[in-house]
Image (cartoon, rainbow, N blue to C red):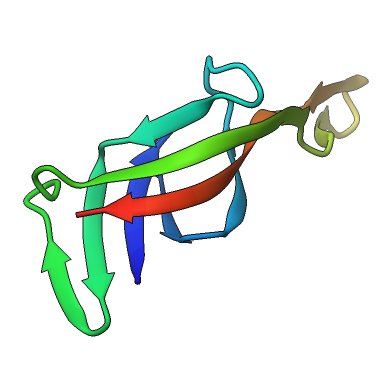
Amino acid sequence: MYAVVETGAKQYRVAAGQTLEIERVAVAAGQPITFDRVLLINRDGQVTVGAPTVPQATVVADVVEHTRGPKLVAFKMRRREGYHRKIGHRQELTVVKIKEINA
């Protein structure tokens, strides 16, 4: 059984027991979080697709920790003009472990 959930303007395919990194959510580590934007549920071949979400479907997960992603560098340069800018970015992430899918 798996589901497709939406959080942080991104979609993730999740199953029970899976660990994944999502964009930072304002929930303390060790606390449960409930995703109610469930777009699709697959129960052993029986697929339920939402329009846009599946009604009364939720995915429950535990927040494991808050981390930061790898540093990404954006370098801008214009040749022969002496212009160059180096900008770094690290995305704030939350690691969650999926407990159950309720349909």
